Length: 289
Image 1 (cartoon, one colour):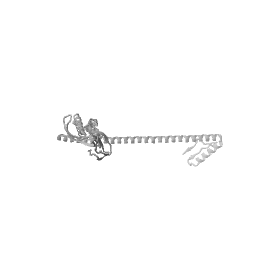
Image 2 (cartoon, helix red, strand yellow):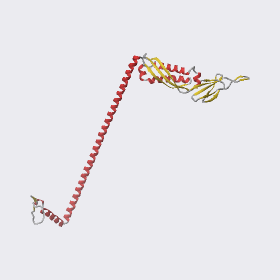
Image 3 (tube, rainbow, N blue to C red):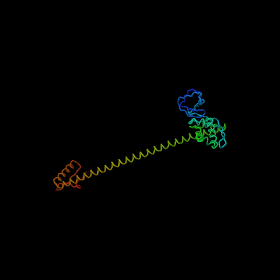
Image 4 (cartoon, rainbow, N blue to C red):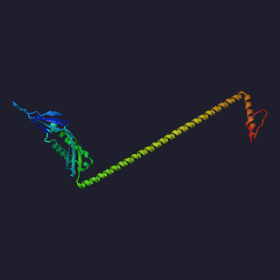
């Protein structure tokens, strides 16, 4: 938008920049704010300079390059549509460097797409569409900076193939999706089997550890029982030794022990006793019926 009426007030918004010209020469770039075109008066030495202001939109915008028919490196004609997102970063360069920066950007992107597709086969385009977008962006970005435009992204929007080829490609894509689904299913089954195998292995390890612990506890209990029995036998032996020593030291105790033995045997009706001169009992003289 060009503003040049003398005395007119105007506002430059944050979304725009103003190119302020004095007698056709760029004087300054106006930021957001309120301004006025000065009135022209006739002075003694001549008229005041002519002032005008051109408003330039610096917001991010989109440009669509539609239906460009391009040959791939294997001579397949495809139609491609490209979406470009850009914004003016240098208002003066965008207006002064080229006649129309949008038309120039359109041409640059179109030529970059042709250069990129001419080096790619159909299979490469189908399997790696991002490469085409990256090639266009790399090719055009620096050139666009030269005329005050920054490109944010350049993406392939549509790819259109010849009719018979489109049908073939649809079948190919369906086959690829089916193979991908089978691959995912196979990976899922393999992961489930791996988890099940790990679970079984963990169960076996835990059972083995439990068996080993039970065996250890059992062995400890058996060892403790053996030690306890040995200790009891040792105590019994010590008591017999002490009893024998007491009987040897005190003969009267020995006689009393013999009498107690006779008393116990007398209670058994089948026991027979053979007595000699001395009261005593020998093991070969006691017979049980």
